[in-house]
Structures are given as structure tokens and as C-alpha cells.
Amino acid sequence: MLLLKKHLNLLECGTDEAGRGCLSGPVTAAAVLLPDDFYHPDLNDSKKLTERKREMLRPIIEKEAISFAVTHVFMDEIEKINILQASITAMQRSILKLTPKPEFILVDGNKFNELSSIPHECIVKGDGKYVNIAAASILAKTYRDEYMLKIHSEFPEYGWNKNKGYPTKAHRKAIFEYGATKYHRMGFKLLPDTHTFEL
Image: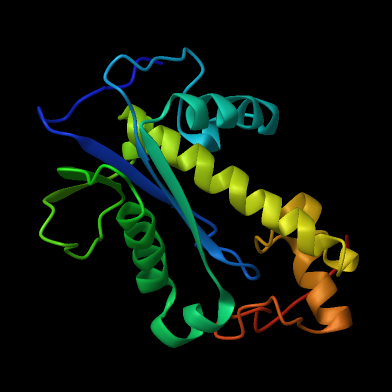
């Protein structure tokens, strides 16, 4: 898939998040500044790639990027500020770590808050349209998956190595049977009002 390289003739970064709809774990965002000549034929929205391809692309993006940063916002902060603001906060913190400072921000989605007077544009499904957002989506997803694999070893009964904290039937069955952990987002509806768990 041919993604757009530049939106404006400025030093642009792309930013995206992963894990917004999960019941456990952090929301994770990345920001990426890529050189104008960056190209990889497999680069795309992380959701359209296999795990193997995402893992293959991650070190390439990290090596070729002018700058990149990844930020986790954890469960306690998500509870305080809500998941939308936590997602925006994770993106903003990642952008602020970039060197050099970007002149324009391309944001995946339709919500963002002004940051340090840097102009921005929200682009729905931008991770399938712009190279730098696609790269950010891959870093956000792989870093978050890596974190979920780490905490899976602490609580293997929830299957985070497979569901990564998303509200699958198996994950909700485990919550029903074992209760919530310190990694669950207690402000989220962990179980539906009526639940049957015949798997």
C-alpha cells in the first residue's frame, strides 16, 4: 500500500496510540519523525499487519527514524483523567521527547489537544494514510504488546499473551473467575450486565 509521505513542507511527526479499548494494561502512544526518503513496502496501519511483520518493522523504523519516542500511561492515571485524555496525554508526552522538535503534528483519530503551539491535524484512519502515523502505530502496538507479555507472566490466567488486555470472552471469563488485578482498569466495565461463559 502506498502511503503519503508528507502533508505539508514542514518537519512533521506522526503520532498514534494502542490499547485504548483494553480492560487492562496501559494505553501506549508513539511519535515518529521520519526522513523524507524513508520507504518500506510492508509499512501500513499496524492493525492490518501480522505480529511477525510488526516485529520485523519495529527495528527498521527505530534505526531509520530521525527521532522516535514511546510513552505508557498507566491504569491509575487513566482512572483520573479518562481514557480519551490518557490517550492524548500519551501522544503528547511522546511528541515532547522528540529531537528536533516537530513543526507539525499528524494525529491518528479525531481528537487532540494543542501542544506547545505546534500546529496539528487530526486524520481519521491516518495510520493507513501517512507513513509517519503508520510507523507510530507499529511502535505503539509493539511496545504495548511487549508490556502485556511481561505482566502475563505475573497473571497467566488472564491470557494477556493472546488477548493483550482486550475484552475477549476468555479474558472476561477469567475476570469473572479470578477477579480483577492491579493491572485492570477499574473504571471500565470489566463484565457485562449479563454474562455467560460457555467457551
